[in-house]
Length: 356
Image (spheres, rainbow, N blue to C red):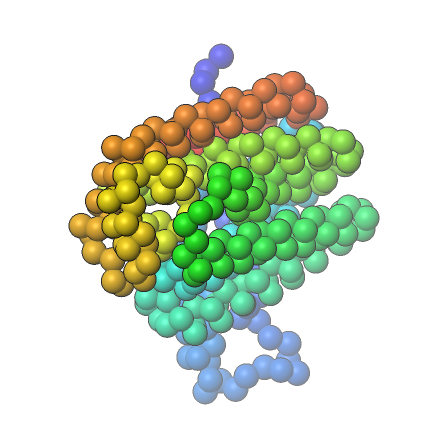
């Protein structure tokens, strides 16, 4: 059988979904007659739409909406009835990324300047708010195309998923702001479960499964799988931040170190660095982003290499990936309809072996 190309799968569904998202984005420009703005203010309305639609138009890999679509299809569910939920999933990513980039003062997003670097923190946050509102509006469309009970379950899952994700963000920001040095691996896995395991893997898959009428037991198995694969996914992502230029798309290596982000590799280094190096490491981590120099960040990455922190991260990511694969093979057999099960597998393989 011909090997499935994950990029082709992602692109195919992106091309199907983008017109749906574009249609919903147009809702931002349309106001009922009773609250129409005067024509002289139209340039401001156009400016607003330009900012709000910026990240959606940049698109991305569409991992999350693909997982919604393919999980539903692997259970025999109709593609067209997944599109509103998948569109809401992608829109959620865009507003979260806008807010994340402001919180982290990131320089780039999808090979272009981060939104707040183009406009301002205030306008970027406002654009994120607009997409957040749009996400719930898109979800409301499910009530006209699905059984109302399923539509409600989808909305409840969105709330649960995003609520846990935002808690994870609070915890990560708090530990970074407080400059905590004695975090454990269990502490980092708490963040990974909240921000990646649930939001990136388990949540989108559960949404697809809910659409198709999956049982509570099946949804629980998907969550267990997603948490393990999400751990691996995020560790790989954090490793790429340290070791990859993202195929020439990224101009600043070690972005997580600039931000002071607590990763598996950093926690390992804090536990294994020599005493003199530990003092310097803590001194660097105590600086804010603008105070850290490229030489200092490169020094931290070199110490991660020397102390085996990067190798440790690679082995841990592989361990979690193997555990996740066992669950997929044994407990998620109900995701059986082809070629969608194999397409899901190709995406799981891709996100763990990607170079950017």
